[in-house]
Length: 262
Image (cartoon, rainbow, N blue to C red):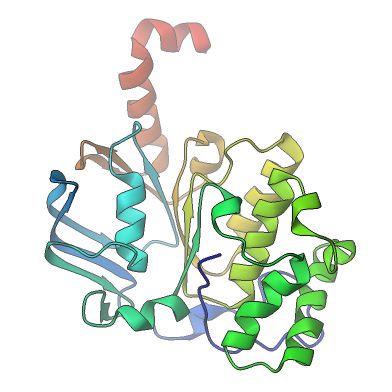
């Protein structure tokens, strides 16, 4: 996985995935886009994009190719702006790219692109070791995280024996173990069954971190504070979840189809 290390966690007596509350640390404005431009393969993705993102739960919606994934990757430094600036917790992503892994946790659409190690316990323990925890305590803390979430039997279980949903949950456990300030989720519910969607939704809503999520799960997004609708790299609408989601549905389905669905 692309590991997103953070401050050394103390998981003694761990009782839940959320661990210590990262909101106790200064955030310096969370995330800010200032006149950002981005080109990929000669094509303009963003031109003059400016956003302030202080809310605790922010959803990003839009059709495929609208710029949702690129926006998330600009926040965690996987992409750097060609013009303008992106600031994360007070750090300019161009000047301070090395600081971003301890601040931002990123969950890919496909867990297979993120997992590196053969067992679940090793996957979680790796980041803890990278953050300075010795190997023995890292394994102990990884076991505590899995036990706290009803997954004790995963500790030495080969990752390839896990279902897609279980792999996605494992990635979340590994990220949350490092206590980042911000969680970025890129379509986290793709191909997941209903029980797994429910479990991950609960984790997202209860996490103390700021969550910025690109998704088409409108039931979950309806509980977010703010929704940003992108189209062709432009912000079509930005505001309260109920209004923006309704406008997007109306735009995609049309009034007559929307009435039939209702």
